Each structure stands twice: as C-alpha cells, then as structure tokens.
Image (tube, rainbow, N blue to C red; front, side, top):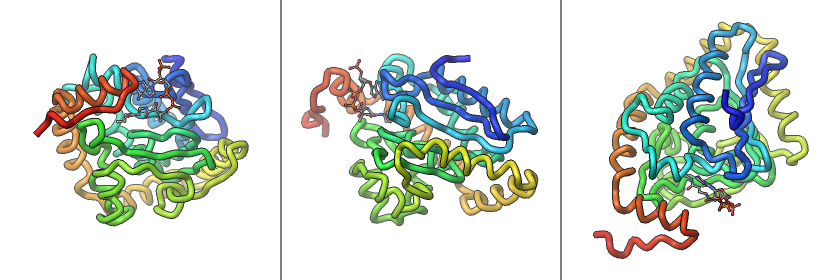
Length: 255
Ligand code: COA
C-alpha cells in the first residue's frame, strides 16, 4: 500500500488520508490505484459502514498530478484515474469528506460523490479544467449544474472561478464550515453516525438519492473520452508547461 494514501479503520469508518503534502496532495497514478483498492476492500468488509476522505498537511488535494498528465496520461476507462472515478460514482456505502486548504479539480469534484462534506475556513475550491485546456470530469458537467444551476455552473466550470468555504456552503458543496482544529473530529463523528444505522437501508436510500442522475454513467464516459483527447492537445501542453515553469500560460497562438 502506498504511503501517499494512509488507510485506517475505526468506529466503522474507513479513513483514507491523502498524504503527499509536499505536492499539496496532488493525486498520482499510485495514489489512484491505492484509493480504488482501499475502497473496494471497504466494500467487501461488513465492518466498514462509511468512508472518510481527509488531506494531510493543510491541503485536501491539488487535483490530478500535472506531471503525470504530461508523462503518463490516462488512455482508456481502465486507466487508474478513470477506475477511481467510476468507483466513487457508483460506491454503495456512504462517503464523507473533510476539506481544508486547496481543493482543486478532483478536490472539488470528489465532493459531488460524497454524501456528506465538511470544510474548514481555509478551504479553497476550484475546477480549472478549461484553464488547463481540459473539460470537466467526474460527472461534474452534470452534477454541478444540478447543484448550483446553469448560470453559476458556467462561472465555475467554463471560467474556472475559485470559491471559499462560505460560498461552498451556500451552494451546497458542503454541509457545514467549521474551524480547522475541529474539522477532522466533526467529519469523523458524522461518518461514525452511519455505524448506528441499519446498513442495508442506508445503501438503498443512497441508491435512491443517486437515481436522480440516471445519466451519470454515460456522462462519465463522455467526459472521460473528451478529457483523454484534450490531454494530447497543444492547449493543455502549454497550460501544464506554464504551471511547471511557474509562468502564466499564453493561449494567444491558438485559434
Ligand atoms: N500536480 C503536480 N504538482 C503539483 C500540483 C499538481 N496538481 N499542485 C501543486 N503541485 C506542486 C507544485 O508544483 C509545487 O512543487 P515544487 O515545490 O516542486 O515547486 C508544490 O506542489 C507546492 O505547490 P505550490 O504551487 O508551490 O503551492 P501553493 O500553495 O502556492 O498553491 C495550489 C497551491 C494547489 C493552488 C497550486 O499548486 C495549483 O494551482 N496547483 C495546480 C492545481 C491544478 O491545476 N490541478 C489539476 C486540476 S485537474
């Protein structure tokens, strides 16, 4: 198991901590595989009643590792990132997130698949897919407009506008905003509440709530296919090279 994803179990909760603080917990291939494996283990373990996602070192996650996007991009729906996305999108047990600091890309879209989410005052959300020459992922092109309406979704997905914890609460990305010192305990306590509930009724209720999005699977594959194509685009090469060179991207040469 990767040390970049810490896995533990307590009080019926499978805790998955993103632990790559020197890169703001950017998700690399090894981490996607470790997360998917741990989620599938949790599915098979009847003592696991809920999953909790946390980030180490003051950040949640800065999203997909941009070096990996350049050097070993996903190529099909069996690639590690795509497997992880389809696992969270269809996960039958409750998932909870505790977000502090940066929650970029998947750091924000993961919350769309979590049943409960808590943010500390330091949380900063952003879905900069277009800025990277990419398109929305994780079903966000369906789930974000459903959550916030088409107008606001356009600002978040097409312009890639960032937003803080209070705005995340207002829009319904999170259930509550709490002081950083209380974040992990609040999220742990919320996740542990599932342990006292009848598990089958929880799973069936979650399935009924998710049934509101019958097109999610198809959206995921359509987004995935487009995203994989975009990763080969010169626009994305410019955006990621600029990030790694710590300069502003220049898209002026593209038509
Ligand atoms: N992929 C790869 N490396 C990343 C990364 C990512 N998604 N996010 C951060 N890092 C690296 C930085 O390159 C830097 O590495 P270095 O110390 O070797 O220079 C280190 O992590 C710390 O990041 P830094 O940018 O210095 O921290 P910050 O606090 O100033 O900013 C972020 C934090 C998250 C706002 C900023 O790093 C960022 O915008 N990252 C890219 C987010 C992104 O576009 N993700 C993809 C979404 S699909």
